[in-house]
Length: 141
Image (cartoon, rainbow, N blue to C red):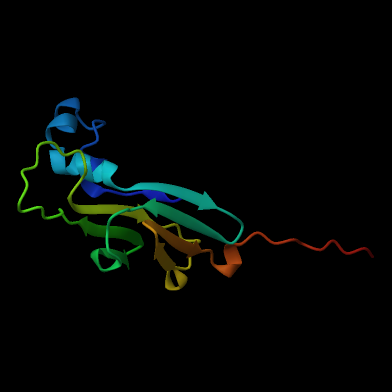
């Protein structure tokens, strides 16, 4: 079982529909958003875990939402204000970001939890009891 990354616009205009649209409809902001948050997906017998690197963002600027079977992690990396200096070059992403994942039926959405510490967001997606692997005892007559 696996989570499926879900981005309605990206999935529609990903180049498989038409090569022309694939490159034209992705704005610079969309490209930056894709690279703004790097994530790992980890699976074990009891749960999935999403581990996301989101350094330099306050906890209050991150949102986690489950709606219609889609988990969305979003937030905003605010630009530091150096009013007395002129920015010469910037490679750091600033602005809003969002990543969405379509959840499988095996995930217990009511028990999803998250923890944010030192720039790492860890989201735990527990499996429903009936979908967890279990050992079946073999009886001898």
